[in-house]
Image (cartoon, rainbow, N blue to C red):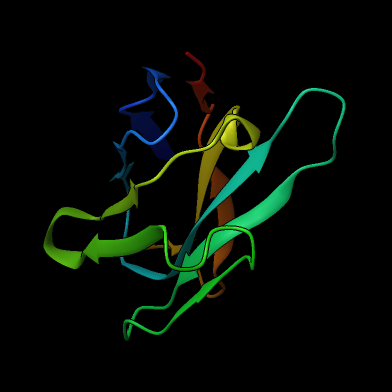
Length: 121
């Protein structure tokens, strides 16, 4: 079994910064892509940023230039550095990872439980 645990959420003022972390643990042979999604109240979940095992990234247009995704493959951890935060960034942020276990042939997508980010003065 694989678990993803996020940390780093909280309350921040507009213009501030936060860094989210998501650590994967368990029976992990390899991890392909990892990503961050968010869901604001009353809205559908949306992709924020994604990073492949080789380091290729893609971002939602709304966060380009403000957010940066990175990963530490040795720690099975993905990060999301969020700068110049806006009230519209308020949401529950969840990470996911495409993981192959030692007994698996295929990759499976696992999700964390989410961490709340509130941007407000």
